[in-house]
Length: 302
Image (cartoon, rainbow, N blue to C red; front, top):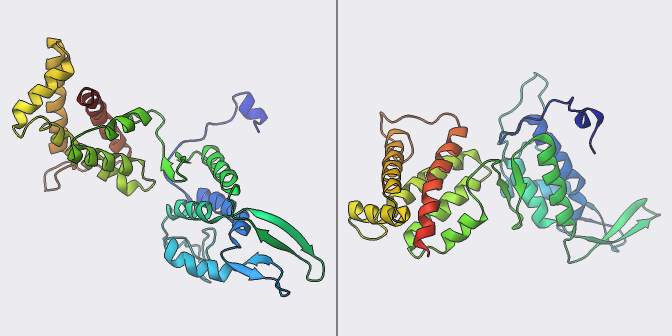
């Protein structure tokens, strides 16, 4: 629903971010709670007459989540809950991105309720579960809508995994398909790993994405032979497609990207290299390097 202030451009735009704060965590957790009944087939509380399941066993779920999603916030009674301050106004440390694992867990384990029977004697509803999980699509759609609503740059993909998204990134489905067509297994593996780390919902993986991509850049230079200089020149001339000006352009770009990889903490971690402290800079490095690599790939898979 679009409200008055939104229709008339009076509402402040939601800041889009990858960082999950306490309130966002709570909103996403509440959505999972609304769908908990669809997990009752796995953690059942059976009706006393044995005719069906009437509730989910929260203790059984809590114990299982100790190992399935160990980073979830837990209150003073060890129950999974919405983060809140204790009696002294302090909030315990917790893994904010574990809520995304919990969302994937709910998605993977929900089943459709095929029948609901109100059990008048006990005053509860007995549930019968089907072997289908159509409810999964509804849940994932609601989560994706919440991501948009609260400004989190994540979404469920078609493989039922949460990935982070970039509004202006270089990476797209066509580049991924081109990577799959690369004949040289080492290069293909490095690029696939870089893409997977780049999509990962945990910011700690984004530095690995850049590192793998720069490794792929170096591997690319030896695509034609182990003589890096000769192979690089052959690749550049192929990419230039007969235009001298583009030979110079690509030579400069390869050299500059190599310099970036050596100067910043990307491929080297000894003293003297420049630390990357702002996670947004990883996207800049990734997209800049991928622009050149993805162009080169187009000439390699002809």
